[in-house]
Image (tube, rainbow, N blue to C red; front, side, top):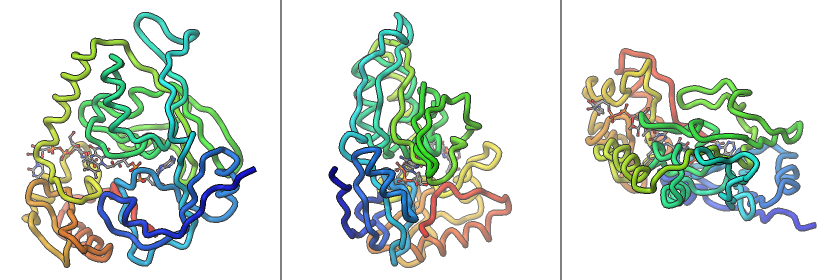
Length: 283
Ligand code: FAD
Ligand code: EPU
């Protein structure tokens, strides 16, 4: 049997912030390769759109779902589908979410269009239940396949304690594949909802960033709180609190993880409300 492709690579190229040193990256294509990769300390990398990775890199193996674990079967399961609802085949955790959302729209399948514009992979988006005010990943899930150090299990959303930006799945449990449950709709109807949800992004910065830094505390916009603390435009090194939206830290080019950490510290110090970090800091 073939083992996973393993390469030492700079992680910056896998992240939307464009920051991060080297690690051993395991491109796993099968469940067997995944189990082998999980035999030593590891981290799971999705679309890298919520990560601030140290400039020194990380010592653990970094697992990236590839090949068949990044493929999709959107054929409706005849036993579980009717004129209103469909349940798809398996969608790999490594599938890029934006392309999937566009494809579902063209197929006239509604349920996940509120997540338009989130530059994640399916597995990463499910792991943190990524979403917007117009919808989240758990709106469209039927079954999740999760691989843990103890083995493989299939669960439904009802088995998990999920909520805002949280799936209830423990860290380092790998979401390998999911089946989607979606409503049949006119493609134009889905497109209109996508366009509407996308409008809310007009005020977000277009530069390199890992998305919102903090979760909204108690439903209040963290961006608004940071803005009210007068922190828009604050710069450390080559990282900047975006003038467009204060919950986004952007890389002006050549930023380091330390620059971002310093800005997070300033925000914590100056905003009077406790806020939970949304990003993940590696290590
Ligand atoms: P990564 O950033 O690679 O990893 C994040 C976490 O998920 C890590 O803990 C990682 O180990 C884990 N993970 C990744 N893949 C798997 C897997 N297969 N199984 C288990 N765990 C896994 N988020 C929102 O919720 N709403 C938004 O509107 C939004 N807008 C954004 C806009 C921009 C421009 C950017 C850059 C980001 C935005 N984000 C948003 C943040 C980000 O896209 C989400 O947090 C997303 O869920 C991260 O997914 P990822 O695949 O990129 O995961
Ligand atoms: N606001 C300010 N100043 C700012 C930012 C926002 O005054 O610097 C105000 C806005 O004017 C608006 C309100 O705060 O009145 C809400 O702002 P916005 O519509 O931008 O929404 P948000 O709550 O700041 C959330 C998500 C985003 C998601 C958008 C759109 C969180 C942490 N953020 O932002 O998700 O894209 O809604 O649905 O939940 C992410 O999670 O990474 C993310 C980008």
